[in-house]
Length: 145
Image 1 (tube, helix red, strand yellow):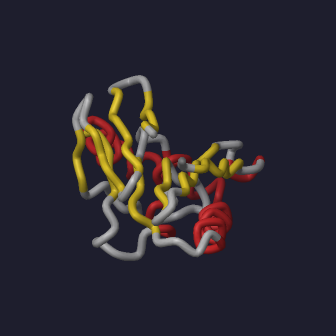
Image 2 (image 1 turned 90 degrees about the vertical axis):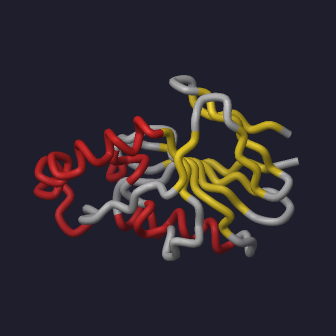
């Protein structure tokens, strides 16, 4: 059975949550964080489990859920999953979000986003070792045991 670790960003990370789903053979991130500091904390959580990062699932395109991918994923070999609309919205809004938030977050702002490298569709299942996730368009993602 998978164990879910909740990463709760503080006020500086606009109180966004990310999730580390720990399975027997590795971990999967569901969303990431907004700032360098919060992303570094989330990365330390993953590393403390001493299991490989098997992948990242992005539930939607808000910066507090996608900006940290760049800090957490240092290899194109790590799959980053999202629906096509999420990737499209990330591309359409990245420059505007940089213009809006860089002056606010300054050195904490992650200047270049890493985009999902795997597109998934509604109803699709994604398997990471013994863990299976199912895509639900507009309703989030479910963990199936």
